[in-house]
Length: 139
Image: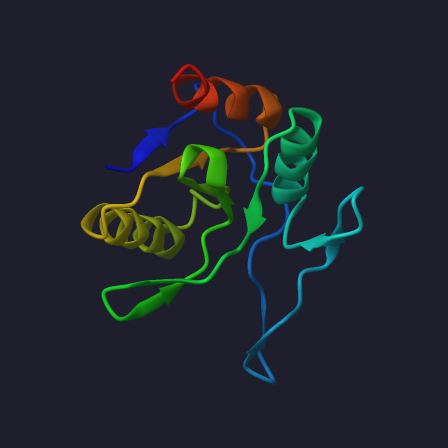
């Protein structure tokens, strides 16, 4: 069952996310470079890669999965915990919240362990990750 992790504070979301070129109707490539030289789609995802590297947590970025005949690309997969992570940062947008709810249901129906981290840009995303991953690290 997907676990939701909501920080106590809310605020203005950061930049990033999947963007589309309205004229070409195709996805743009990730444009934020990490310290390891990989490209990710947002500053939040970059922060996650820094946290994973610093804590020696192996991760896969946007692995392709099939659930119910649909393709999904979760933000991260942590093989050592068999856990998918979604960083949700546009919670002020109704259509974004609806898409996140659909993902939560799809992951649950598919029997996947998933952690949805709701981050508003306030406070430390690394601390949120640390708190959210504690139950998995203690096993």
